[in-house]
Length: 601
Image (cartoon, rainbow, N blue to C red; front, side, top):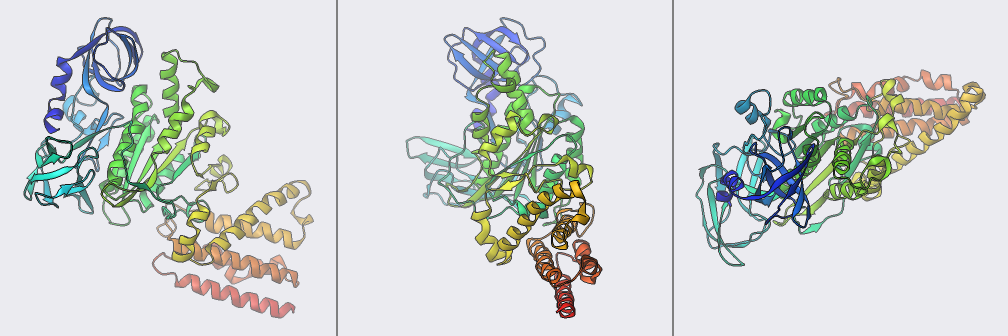
């Protein structure tokens, strides 16, 4: 395998599979096709532009090219690689910034300067760097597909497991002793069950459009903790789940994803900047290395892979970037790690599909998108899940995809089709964003279908009353919507105190719980225990206050309670490490309510 990889360029330059017939932007028609297969990796012209064969018909084919095709002319040769477009998987991926087809941008910069030269070839993994390999198996052992052969300490807090490829199993004939090796050097030799010997290196390749195999799909009943209260308390996502974050320009999609990337309890983050504006990608590339991982105190890049594919890059590479990212995530999932993919945004990916489909003169569906758009979206999100891996570990891939509907219209095709295949929906609201209420996730349009599956976990690990408190709060928020309609007509003074108290509690909940300050050292992140206690205190205030009002207390007296002011400020005053302050607030609230009841009894 390693020899085939190192000689890849030589193979491409020797095997001509056809000649260019017609150039239509990134889509090229090839004539005289011989010995080619679907999704084969190719290079086009003497410039060696990277492409992928996406359509075969008799002796002609269609190739989508991942680079600018300026200068390509009819009768230019097309070279075949004899393999599909694949990702190189092994030590060295963590902390690297790639483009949409897994070319390391920093290595390209060192080779070509600030502008990427067309046809440039740079290995995805550094061929010169040596890694300290520690074998885990002895010669003579039977090695199953996907089992662990050895380990490499890639970063201080991340152990990289060297796996047998999912297609290889057999008896281990030899294994390299502990020491320093490059990713292409042989570290093990296996006599395959199907016959023949095979050398294994620390690197393997996998076609990006094919899902990596696993043993079993497991229930999605463990939450991915993000530290964002509106998410974890109201609309949590399971590890291995799927999320869509739709929102118009300026509503905070990128900021929400960055907050999730920094604070979530995933072992690894894969951030895909798919077709976003260059300044947003620049912000990500400059901010991520400076972010500190709260769990380790080290740079967040030590558990992050970035794929940067801006809107001015070739549109076909945008289409491939999603699959490149998910393949990397599946590789680390197979090592028993929990991976979160942040795709920003899938709308740009769908636009790339639309442009390529149009150039291939396919019949368009709604709003010009190809008829197979739902299938493509489903294929992507279906690669999420919590799995039992081939080696017997448990790992997960959680997909959090941003959607950018034009004008914030959630009825457009990409948002609607995405909703069919995801189970968690964090809808961003422009009115909340304009009011500087962040995260601007609407509690009316958002939902999570993982609630029932994860309720036992929350009740056991966090608070037995968590599900009951959440249900109570959600009911109040929906009652508030109906009451606000009445208020707009007749004003709040026309409502009785019992109904005005609902508005009061909902306003308190929004300001004291849902709104979160990313620049406050205490409020930027909340543990599940703190969230559950905060929510329970607000629910207690609602229940006890409701009884007090029925017994004759007034809203003015309720607002003057010292405990009321404590509740407003508790997100800033009570640190995650010491929740005793919440005990004091709850005790003060109970005493105040007891005194008020005694006064009006």
